[in-house]
Image (cartoon, rainbow, N blue to C red; front, side, top):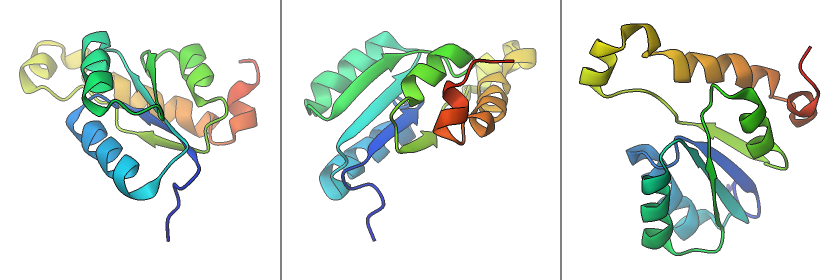
Length: 124
């Protein structure tokens, strides 16, 4: 069963290793109508855009800790795949207080956005 055919997918952390593999697989096998690549790295997005050269890809610069930007990216998406994380060991060791923030912040934001309508409503 293909859950992605004809769907719009939002992929957080889309320029990472998982995101690139997922994108390649989805484009080749599942035929989504669009994949929105959401990440903080403009250079990686540019490289990925050139590498895949597929009109179904859309690129959003943003951070999952930015609730308003995440809401804008989610709007109209059928599927959200959360793959954003701070995972480079030296970076995590030096920034211990921030290492889990992208993942945990998105987990806190995403459940509120589980219903697309709830995500688009103004914050209390």
